[in-house]
Image (cartoon, rainbow, N blue to C red):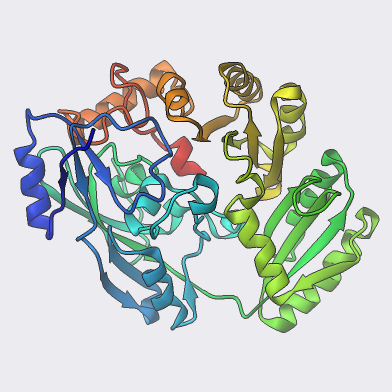
Length: 409
């Protein structure tokens, strides 16, 4: 059944739509739809689109800051940044290959889902680069917070709690990011045929060194090669990269480190890791994003046993991308293994009926649920925004995870 789509052309119009929605049912916030399959199925009677809220508000290269409206295509932002040799530090994921969606990813979707890429281990997560936000709350008020520079805050940090909230707290209008220069050069050290425990040990040694690793992953056999590969990325000025690669090859010689990929070969490798291309097929499998302490990843996969179909490690082993069969039994196995190891798991891709009946996001503890209800009530007391998106609408904790499991990673 088709639903009415409301498409405001200005902030004031968006605020008026929200005020008029009081008592008329929930609104599902939509952008370009590239991340639409993440989360529980939509429940709103109408859709509120950010498609017309588009454009770069400012890009100040000297201040290393950019502000863009929620509906702005990410490609437009990145083109402006590249023209000045700058980038978003957290290496934003392009979800289209994994989720099978079309269109252009937008700034609003980026903030709402907070999916950080491989560079998160050195440059921080989305929430670390997000320094300003403008949004409409559940009363139809326009709130602006943050600025062009990093600031310490006390009390409720509206910027951080909305990053990874999946639109459950308000309609994002604009977002401001701090930036970094694009590295002049990069290289990727490759170690072959290491078992998982040895691979994690190699990654830990490299990450504990002074040689500035910006990517650390282990790709299992069958993902482009018939043997596992453990990869480390080094970025910066060419002379610095050459020096650090030489030192890392010596440091990791016992793990079989002998060569490094350069140029487009290196970039292609990290795009595949960033966008989880290795797990895109078969399409019918469920995809999980699991955060753990790096030393727990091997134990996690062992606990899953046959429930794990394919997987790889990013962030030095702290992030596990995993495919399973789309069954309740497999989902239970993932939740049980994560709980035993103190991690958190998000069901990123699954059939709609599975996402409707199972926990998509990590279940909240009673204390965290109580805090979450308070934040939700303060910003969206009527439950207008993305009802049921993160938790079932009859669950009183239907909101973001404070400090956020999504935001934190």
